[in-house]
Amino acid sequence: MSASYRLFGAETSAFSIKLRSYMRYKGLEHEWLVRTSENEETLKEVARFATLPVLVTANGFAVHDTTPTIEALEADSPNPEAIPEDLSCAFLAAVLEDYADLWLSKAVMQYRWGRKKDQKEAAIRAFDEYFVSEKPENRKEMLQDSIERMMDMFPSMGLNKEMGGVVEKSFKRFVKLLNVHLEKHLFIFGGRPSIADFGLAAQLGQLLKDPTPAKIIEKEGPFVKAWCEFMDDPKPNGPFEPLADLTETLAPLFSKELAITFLPWAAANLEASLSRQEEVTVVLGKEAVTHAPLRSAARSFKDVRRKFSTRDDEEALMSFVEAVGVGEFLRRPERPKRDDDGKGRNHRRGRRRGARNKRENDTTESEAVVAAGIVAVENEADISAKSVTEAETSPDNSNQQETPIVSSEEAKVQEAADQVEKAEPADSDMTEKTEANENTSVEASPSIDAGLAEKSSSAVSQEDGVASDDNENQATKD
Image (cartoon, rainbow, N blue to C red; front, side, top):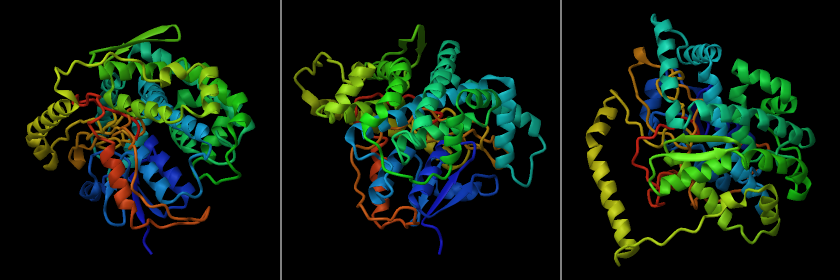
């Protein structure tokens, strides 16, 4: 019997590995298909965007973004659980998943493409994975071109000299703190992996492939390395633990890392996006960093804030976030009311609708070109780390936009491992829950296509007040 799903991805794609690890844990039957020059045409026939990963259901419906995909699959096949029953832990897991997708992915990009030794090895790895049998004669030129294209994508992920330094210090600090936590706990929230484990292990697993960051993890994080290896095909080994039993080593991850880097950055990026500023400027630790707003990251963090607003009656969670100093970033700040000239919300929605229709009309010609296979328009579903290295397009995860599609002889092996911006997770899903025994293979239920469609469409919703008509290259999450 054929598998219920086909999962197109790449070993060099963090988001592909994230989704594969999750599906293995859930016992969801799937065929893992590494993207190569030989199956490129098949992939183009089913994919909605030129990004990885691509999950195709038995009915042929394809989705790219890992966060809403996992949400839909979790609802359809709830066992074994990947989201803690404790609402406080469930929210903190969502924050850590966002940290992995939006922040730790910057470390992957920074280390992989910021140093010559790491660049060369990454480019060769992706090239050899994509071109399996017939190798192009201009291999050397293609490798160099892919490296240059990836370096050109740094600004689209908010990476520059200042941010690069902050990201590297952040990574080293996080590895040490996570190692202490994993020394006492098998997984981040106890005896089984959560959405946080899948997101973090996927990014750290990529960093273990690159010489420079791999040495750091091997030296400072032996438990982190072992956990990453186990997360390739994880199994539940006990229940989730209550927050009180995790706090001793979980709290420092937030107070000494997320409260210093990711959360103040994510909050500043969201506010800059909402106010349509041209630049984000924020002090992270002692370093001031500035870059253009990342819209998809803003939408993703906006959803984290929405989730937090629904948990404000959870005493344990409120106590935790205040103790670790992150409450100010998770709460929506007071904003002055907008002057609508008496026309109200419906008028604003009408204007957004009109602007969206205009954009759709303006892109008709571009979309026709994309369909012709000549070039793909970069949109927010895309991740800047779509390294040219992986295969003509890099995997996307949460924010992946369409990446340039080139002919197979010019295929630029795009780097799927570095995707940093993720699309906004859906507020609700329409999948029906079905029972499944732990550690057993389960087939997709008839309702899963509807659930994935709901999650996928809501992930690109424009009704959230965050500008999204910039051609932001997003290189990582999903």
